[in-house]
Length: 272
View 1 (cartoon, rainbow, N blue to C red):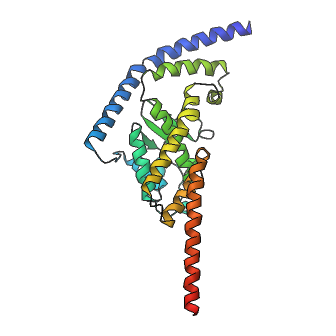
View 2: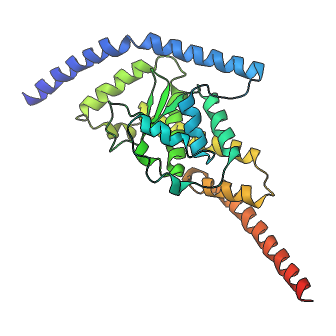
View 3: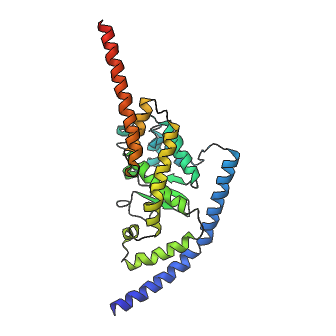
């Protein structure tokens, strides 16, 4: 009897999902089409990749260590504490800023906000992508760790890439049924092959991380110790790109050894 009730419950909820979610399918498809048109126009007109949304620009600037003040105002607006942000101020990285903006533009230019979605528990979720709003939510609780902010942002960008395709809401319904069958344990979807979460984080996310690092590396001066040091810190955060990190780390050690050697020779000359 218990199995029968669960089956009926699944059918009812499945029908409810179909009715409420399918109505959004056309809207999502229109968003995907408009995003692609905007992207094509941007590339053909060679426009600068600047996001018009103030919150998005503020968060990207904060992640790139270009600004620590506007982010406090933004968090205060949503009622979040700003304590601890000054302690994470690091050396400015305009290359990182440019790279993040360019990656954003490649995949639909989603907005980024600290405003937390009511659909998710802020204690358990660090990031979320909202396809209807084309928006990435990054939990303010991790704003004192800019490396983690960057990782979450790239992870959720994988969903932005997914939702450029048509018919995604049909997949949402399918995953909703799996979610119900798994007794509403949403995290199980990350391990179910070819669910939206599985595809986003097991397949697309590693590709986006590699693309991001390749783009970042293409913009830095690999003979500049300061720039390579910054890159080394970023690359070390990601396990998917060990070969990239090892290459940069080797270059960095070589350059630092050369600097030590020059300093030593300089000191010897001064003694003479």
